[in-house]
Amino acid sequence: MNFLAKVFIYPVNSLILADLVERFGHKPLTMMNQIREKVTNISLDSPPINITPEDPKLGLRYAAVEVPAGVRGRMALIGPLIEETEAAIIVENPPTNFGCVGCNRTNELMKYLIRSKGVPVLEVKYPETDEEARDFVNRIAAFLESLPEEKSEENEKGEEKEPAEKEDEK
Amino acid sequence: MSAEESGIVKIALVSCGSEYSGVQPEFEAAAAKVNAKFVYPEIDIASIDTIGRDFGLEVASGDLRLMMARAKAVVEGTTHVDGVFITTCFRCAEGAIVRNEVRRYIHKHSEIPVISYSFTERTSAGTLLTRLEALTTIARRRHLLAREVQTGLTAGIDSGSTTTKAVVMRDNKIIGKGWVPTTKVLESAEEAYSQALKEAGVNREEIQALGTTGYGRFLIGNHFNAQLIQEEITVNSKGAVYLAGRQKGSATVIDIGGMDNKAISVEDGIPGMFTMGGICAGASGRFFEMISKRLGVDITELGALAVKGMQENVSMNSYCIVFGIQSLVNSLAKGATPEDVAAAACYSVVEQIYEQQLQEVDVKEPLILVGGSSLIEGVPKALGKLLKIDVLVPENSHLIGAVGAALLASGYVEE
Image (cartoon, rainbow over all chains, first blue to last red; front, side, top):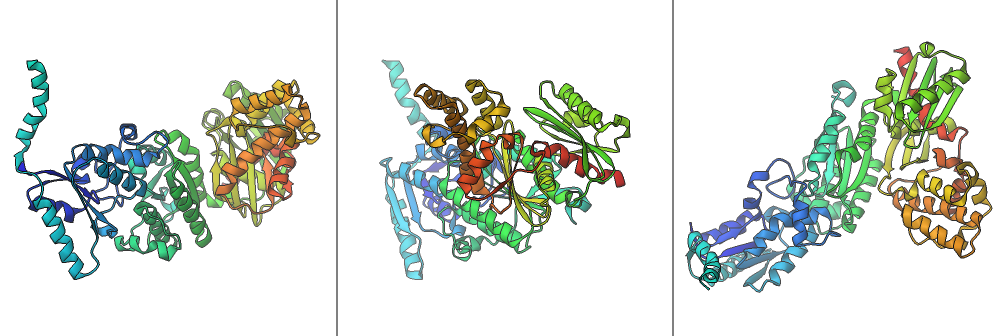
């Protein structure tokens, strides 16, 4: 599949944001893709999941051991998405049904990691009026249009391998 | 259909996302072992945005607001459950505030038994088993727990981590007692039971019903073909209010055992909220054993020593059983008296119980202190001083488990 850029979205499970990103040819980095194989239970975070006891340990890559297990378990899923992020859209103050990660400490950490990554980030407030809603969509659209040229997943894999190949040549 | 009718106990899991912490399979395993299942109270997703104002506690985390909404669904009867298990991540301050207030809210507005717990990714099914067993007992065997009078000739054995206790009771009176250190679980139980039978002057075959409790309850219960095998939270609280003569109305039971301790809020002899320590041995009878050994006195002499001392003369730097004892040893080296050190040890234990456990239950008088450590005079003195209330230590306070088991087992005599 061809896409333009890998775009992290916040809330990370927002179907509306994911759809918007896809409409502009980009790849949304979403929680849904991360947990497809783990759906077994009910929770506010949609879709619901079960994490294995190993996941909070994987989360140590992003948060120290004194950080609660629930934050590290969530980061075990979200952290890898942040690592491959090329651009991000952060929607502030969204209502729960727009998308929600249940733990606000996780939200704070993931937004910090995104902001400090140095990739293009659009931060927009969730709209409360029709006029704000139009402006909201327009700003996201303009941001998505400004992102890099098209590339395919296969090309990208090739690009990732390049440095290693160059090393071999030396 | 109620839990007593169906056999399966429905427990509402009110958590901030235990499924993200790697502990959900452990929760499920513990529930399955006690024939319970977790249910998730239905809520309207839109209510998550307004529940903070409705509940009066506005927090940022969506899952914590979900906990409030689910608690409301339980209280209002939208979802019918037999018990509630409230749990949040260990070390999360926002989670701890919500967990505590949600627990209070359910307790205030319903009769549904509640337990709360803070988990780490290392929480195991074994850790939760006694707590969930107690929760399901309260839901499933309420009629049994309502028993206030022992009838017939029954016995109870409490196989604790440090000592094994046994009693024989006839017509609401203790007629035989046994108390031995726990070495090999079965052999110690045999010895304690034999002591109690001998003192009572009855044969084992004459006993009409036997109840077992404590860590070794399953092993000894199966060995002696006990009619009742029951965890120590419900049995001990029953034994405590029975021995204290406070079966009616409110009471708070603090049970300092050899390896862990329990704080139980009791209403008409039935536990409501309870907490069970067990992460650190610094607040257990084991700490007293070690400090007695270091002071060169028998543990039975430690209490008398403690009441003569001043805990203020000793600086305790840690609650840890290792570093705490190191502090006490350092104090001795600096010239503190054994009496002061014994008093400081007692104060350290009750301070930990106060800080770590009594915050999770509503302390209502009378405060009944039981378990082997209640016999160390310095302990009730230190607890009374800390809480500024009179502490009640009933006669035979170390036998509450065995007495509770014998009392509850008499329910099987009539059956």
